[in-house]
Each structure stands twice: as C-alpha cells, then as structure tokens.
Length: 327
Ligand code: HEM
Ligand SMILES: CC(C)=CCC/C(C)=C/CC/C(C)=C/COP(=O)(O)OP(=O)(O)O
Image (cartoon, rainbow, N blue to C red; front, side, top):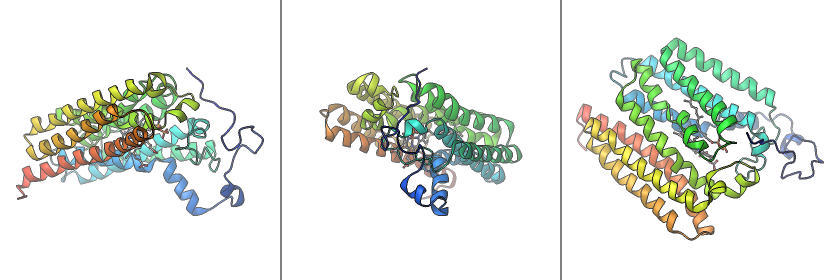
C-alpha cells in the first residue's frame, strides 16, 4: 500500500512553521461559530444530505411507510449520524493529503484547528448515537447495513482502496450507494428488488459523478500521490470510462420504471439521463485545456442535480400512482 503521509504543507514547504493552526486559529484559539462550522465540514454534511435524501426515498417507496413513521425517522437520523461519522473517519486518516489539495486545504484537521484525538471523539459520539437510535428505532438488518456503510467508506475506501488502486471509487462507491436500501429495510426489515436496483443506480452513477472532478483536480491528486484514474491512465481513458458509466447509469435508471410501470419517473429518467450522456460525450470531444477542465466541473455539478432529480421523480411518480394527482 502506498504511503500518503507527506511531511510538509503548501503553506510551509520547508516545515519551519508550527505544524498546526491557520492564522485565524492562531489569533483566536476558540471561536464558537468557526467550531460549529468545522463540525459541519468534518461530518461532510452536504454529501450526507444527499445520502439521507436517497434513504428517505427508499423509505417512501417501501410499503406502509407512514404507519412506521418512528422507524422512518430513526432510520434517517441514524444514517445522517453514521454518514457523518464516516466523513470524520475519512478526514482523520487524510489531513496530510488534504493539505496538498486546493479543494481540501482548509479542512479543520488539515489546518490543525481540530486535533485527531478530538475528531476521533466526535466520530465516536456520532457513531454511538447512530447505533443507539438504529437499535432502538429500526431493526438489526438496518443497523448492520448502516455499519457496513460507515466502515466501507471510513475504513475500507479511505485506508485501503483510495491510496492503492485507480478503481478505488468504483468499489468505495458501494458504501455511499447503500442508503436507499437502508431506508427500505428500516421500514420493512427485509430486502426487495426495487431498493436493490436503487443501490445499483447510485453504484453505477458514482464513477461518472467523481471522475469528472478527478479530471479537474488531477494535478492535485498527482501531487498528493493518490492514484486516481486520470493520473494513472490519463485523461482520454478517464473520459471514456465516464461515458461508459454515464450510459450504464442511464440504462439502470430506467429499470425502476419497468419494475413499477411509473411512466412519469421513466420520462424524467430518460430525459435527464440523455442529458448526462450528452455531457459525457461533449467532455470526451473537447480538446484538453481550460475549457475541458471547466466543463468537467460542470458535469460533476450536474451529476449531483441529476441524482437528486431521479430520486425526486421516484417520489413524484409514486404520489401520482398512489393518489392519482392530476398533473
Ligand atoms: C466513493 C464514492 C464517492 C466519491 C469518491 C465522491 C467524491 C466526491 C468529492 C471529492 C466531492 C467534493 C467536491 C468538492 O468539494 O469540490 C463530492 C461532492 C459531493 N458528493 Fe460525492 N463522492 C462519492 C459518492 C457520493 C455519493 C454516494 C453521494 C450521494 C448519494 C455523493 C454526493 C455528493 C454531493 C451532494 C456532493 C456536493 C457536496 C458539496 O456541495 O459540498 N457522493 N463527492
Ligand atoms: C450508509 C453510510 C453510513 C454511508 C457513508 C458513506 C459516505 C459518507 C459516503 C460519501 C462518499 C464521499 C464523500 C466520498 C468523497 O471521497 P473522498 O473521501 O475521496 O473525497 P475528499 O477528497 O473530498 O476527502
């Protein structure tokens, strides 16, 4: 396994300054607003919000979700806390790496505002709360799947896959794909075809979500010695894989429509997926340069809206099918 421990920081290439602390932190050791913001960033709360949303859709699609509203709430809270713990674990492992990437340079551990020990305590609090809530409000299957998500991301992906293989995110993405199934099992206690397809959907979406960003940040990943696909196999191969996974995502996104006969979802999935594939084709066609880098950023941003749209369309279609709303 490659080591990702790097001795100096971009702020201090010669290692002469104290190892920790931003200017703000040095001037003002405790600032409550900054501290709360740091806790938010440490838990990767924005990513977790989409994980929780996909879990909520898994719950809403499950039979009799409203009757089991306590399990539904416990499931969402548990996933939010466990997802947050995964984000903290990830940053406990990577402060040295984060210091070498412009995107992550200002994270609380990378800048030394929060210590590894403090972050570990935070992860333990989040994880204990998640376990207690899931054990009390849901069922053992939901608890086990959620634990698998946190360990899969915070330990298997972060410690082993990310520093050792360019296919890290394909397998690492499985952890982040679990929430729709976790939402479903929180309500039903069992596994069914529809939520498994929803897991597959996030699983095949993840590479086309992340690799455009990796293209954009390839120089930083190379500096940090992380073997992301654009660094190990080049930009052309990465763009080809983005296109492959975009097409795969488009195809898998149509399966729920076939399973449920939900044409509203099917129509939205078809159109938004066609757009995603169109973006992948344009990314592939652009000559290397600033325009391609900028377009890769746009595709990354669209990937998030796209997944959000697909899962929103699933709820919309279910409402129309169940209650016959006129639209
Ligand atoms: C191993 C799998 C994944 C990898 C490697 C990955 C990678 C990333 C990275 C590096 C960012 C940060 C972009 C930035 O700060 O500029 C990001 C943002 C984001 N990711 Fe992913 N992601 C993965 C899976 C997922 C999953 C499963 C979801 C949700 C279902 C998701 C939702 C998001 C969202 C909502 C953002 C935007 C956060 C923000 O605006 O700050 N990601 N992803
Ligand atoms: C079900 C459950 C509890 C799942 C938790 C899984 C989870 C939090 C997945 C998020 C995936 C994610 C943020 C990847 C970022 O990649 P990175 O860590 O390589 O990005 P970085 O460079 O921004 O740190």
